[in-house]
Length: 449
Image 1 (cartoon, rainbow, N blue to C red):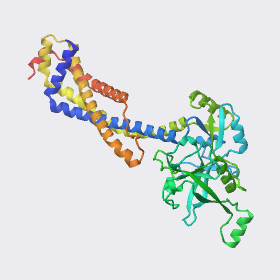
Image 2: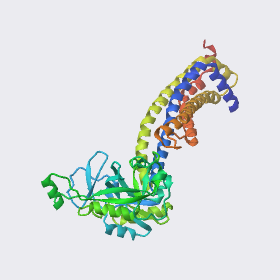
Image 3: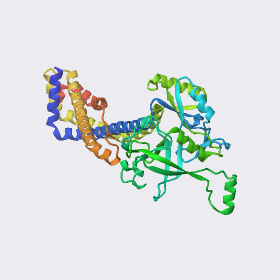
Image 4: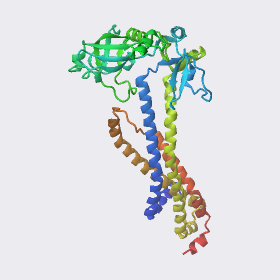
């Protein structure tokens, strides 16, 4: 008997038991729905994380540290010996550990490593306040402007070389500082105050403690607004929406004033190393290896992606388990359906055998039916998941303010692979009922009531 004829007969057999077939398809569809939605959400989460990383970090640059423990889990079972020349970082559990800091000599040494174009210390400067005459004072943070960020501007322009005393103002400060519009802010002056960090044994600290007052060693600096940056989307690194940007010289001068006389003076936790032709992954990895050989820690944006992907994959597996439970449950449904079908069609099987149908064709007939149930259940479940995902994407993107980035993304190859897996599972579930049908004695089957 031809396979196409067996396929047609399988379809007719499934139609003759519509309710039982639909219930089994529904059971498989539930698992397919959950697994498809899990795959889509996992793809979307990976894409979202990668977009954030690529939006905030130059993929052709490396993040360099003096201590490789910054990028790894060091032994935390023993207490660390205090070293005042070290800095500290806090892990996800809130525990603090000391790490070596980069010095100017380290920066100079790293810049001499083959493949490095330039090295820029990563400096965030927290001001005492930001204000204008007659306006309230606000806290703020400065950072060196990186052209890679390419912010969308509401007014003004950013020259290739930013002059000293210039600032790029975020949109959030426009109305707060009394400007009528972003255009009004350009060319105007803002005033910032810097507070020098005072050590506990310094003269000013001792005098302040005796008098019961706070140290007053701070300076004010005027900066001219050259551009106003639009409020960034949620893809920008959290907490940086109100960052103000200036050139490297001004940021270093601010940081020097704040940290002078302390152990943090000219010390940096991380630095950005620009790699020559860093878009070439082979060259990027080779330069990263040379930095590590020199005794420093180095991490690329790919390393960060992998680190985040681990968490996403773990969450994806946890959710997928529920879908797999539904699939496992549906396997018993397929077995049950096929066994009932064999019992109800015993005389039919006997008649087909009496008319010359081979055991192999009988076996194929029931296996085709099982595979069709898996295909239909998988298709229905996957289709519903895709429809729901497409419908939810605009709402989720708008709610989270991430623009056109979608949090649920489906890949055709994954859907096809899932359908093949579900068909295979259903096919295996139908093996025993199919063998039972193929082994029926035609005479005994014809006598069955």
